[in-house]
Image 1 (cartoon, rainbow, N blue to C red):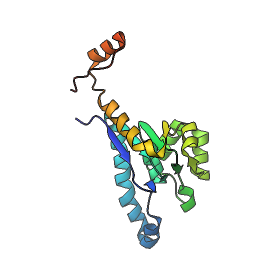
Image 2: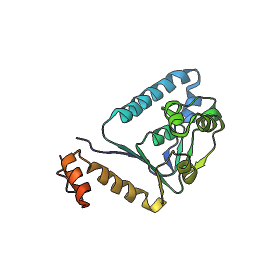
Image 3: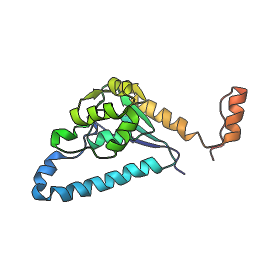
Image 4: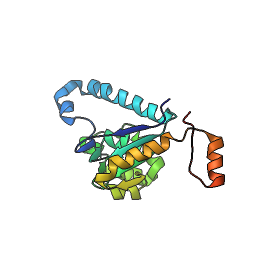
Length: 179
C-alpha cells in the first residue's frame, strides 16, 4: 500500500514546463506534439487528485508552466526559500494547462487566478505562501530533510483510529501498528 507520494525536481528547476524549443521545431506538427505531452500530464494530475495517499510536492528552483500546475497539485506543498513560481503561458500565447485553470481559482480565488494566468508574475516562495499556493517555506538546505520528515509522518497515519483516539485522549506519542 502506498502511504505517501513525494514529487520534486533536482537542480535549477522543479519543472520548467514544456520545452518551447521543441514546440518551435515541430512547426506545423506542434498540435500533435502538444497533445502527446499534455494528455499524459493531465492523466498524471488526475491520478494524483484521485489517489488515496497524500501528495507532497517539494519545490526547489523554478516551477513554471506545467511545472507550476504540478507544484500546486500537492496536498502539502513545500518550497525552498529560493523557489520561484510562474504560469508563463500567455508569454507563449497559450492558455494554462495541467489543471491550473481548475485548481488555481479554488486555491487563490478567481480574481487572483486571473491575475496569475494573464499577467504571469514570478512569485517568490514567500509570495506563493501568502497567496495560499504553498503550505510551508523552508531554507534551501532544509527542503529535502523537511520533505522526508513530513513524508515519514504522513506515512505513519495508517487509519489506525483506536490508537489515534488513545493518543489524543492520553496526550502521548503514537504507537501505530503500521497496517
